[in-house]
Structures are given as structure tokens and as C-alpha cells.
Length: 87
Image 1 (tube, rainbow, N blue to C red):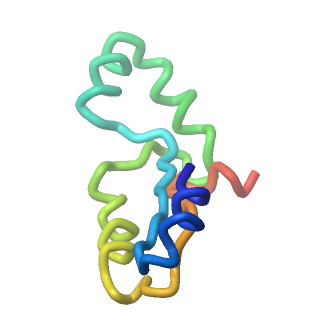
Image 2 (image 1 turned 45 degrees about the vertical axis):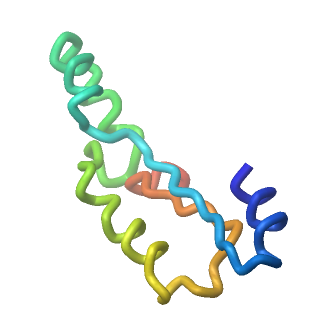
């Protein structure tokens, strides 16, 4: 959808990009992981960094996409996964 919108809206100088986060420890996932703590280790082992991400670790990608530093970037998907896709 993001790439399609980037193509459709690009001529109007509107950039469309997406961020795909990996496994993150948030208030929502905490409710589940606190009930099933064995999943924390299991999910943590799904990426080379061996841990879950924190919501604040998305701010760099968000800040960059919202700034003029990414002015020639559209139709891109930024993976913030702790390297999950590297495997």
C-alpha cells in the first residue's frame, strides 16, 4: 500500500514511506508477555541482537522520515527489527 501510494502521490510532491517494526516490548505486548514469560526469551531469540525493541528505538527512523533529510525517499519500507531480516 505504501509503495502504491508513493507512486500515486509522488507527482504532487507527497512522500509515502512505511516503518516495519519487529518484536517490541510495549504496554500491549507486556500484558501478554507478563502472563507467558517464556515467550520473552523465545521472541528475543528471533533476531541477532537477542532482545525485544523498545518504542523509543523507532524515533530515529520517524524523525528522519519526517525531516527534509529524507526528501528524496518515497515508497520505502524501513525495517526496525533488530536484524530479524538479516537471517
